[in-house]
Amino acid sequence: MGDVLHAEDVTYTQVRAFDPDHTIAFLPVSALEVHGPHLPLGADMFTARWMAEDTAKAFAAAHPDWTVVRFLPLTLGTDELPLPGSMDGTQRELYRVLLAHGASLAQAGYGYVVMTNGHGGARHASGLEAACREVSRRHGIEMFTPAAPVLYDIITGKRFHRVEIILGRPLTAQERAGLLTGEHAATMETSLILAERPDLVDPVYRQLGPGGPPPFRPLAALGVPLGGLLGRGDPQRQAKVQEMVRALAGGIGWLLNARYGYGGPEVTYMGDPSAASAELGHAIRQVAVEDCLALVESVTRGERRAEDVRSIASDSVLIHPLFLRRVALAAGAVAALFLLTRRRRKAR
Image (cartoon, rainbow, N blue to C red; front, side):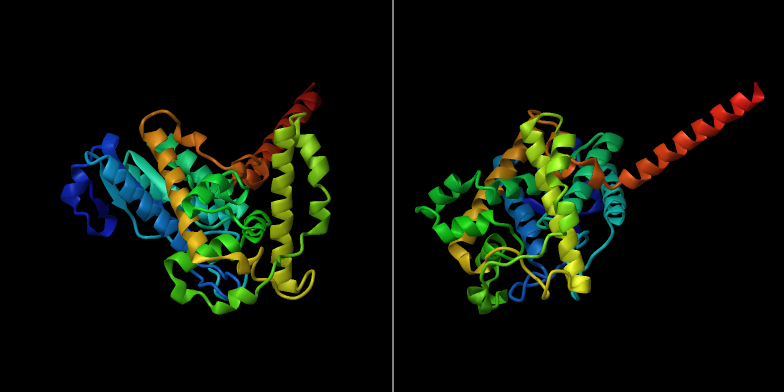
């Protein structure tokens, strides 16, 4: 059985012996964030960490000829709930740090880099995925982050059947509704922490019913028209655009709620924490690791390109970390072209 090395224990001699075609790094990336009144600030980081650890162990066991290295968590992110205790940065800062990290990993001889993540913020996922694609392009390695698409399939019901097989029973109506009606410190995350660190979960979660932030209504109202405009006649694409707009409207509404009391009292979770259980957490964790491993295997076998491992967060250019910069460059180019054309006309 292959071993998983810890990056902080690796020596320079070992690094110099890396074979990029058979060396893979697992890097957890999630910041600390407020998760309701009942979960620890490290909920997202715990998820990113166990996903890296469990997937790395499974991959090493199946590939004893590979060098498998697990890194310490990078507690960095964006779009965290802006309440005391959350460690929030800008999306551009996240992107730039990951570009630097990726360059160092490529230089060290890692041919494959798997970035795991437990934070569901749309701009956070977009920043991670954009950084992975750019690092892969610049340095000729395969760097990708499978966490968002894997967890998304669970909370949208696509993996309920597998969860039920592991549980040995059907999901209850409350569990199904809890997983499907939004997630932040609710059914899935509370279950995962109950499975990993029950000592860190305040029993008050049992009294927390369904709840969530107020959506920012002006943006929420644009979901259908933007879906029609950007969907270009493709119903599936239209649905994705509408879902992204809803997520952004919820994020902005939550931001305004936390800072200015928009929509009512302070909101610290979204969904139904009371539907959680350690049993459900163990099942979800197993499904997530199985699916994460399947994506890692498909990339390392050459069946899938790293850039093709992406979530719906990569579908909208509006939340790409370089969107504003590109708009500014385009505007500058248009202005320069306008001035040049004007000068030529005057010269005539």
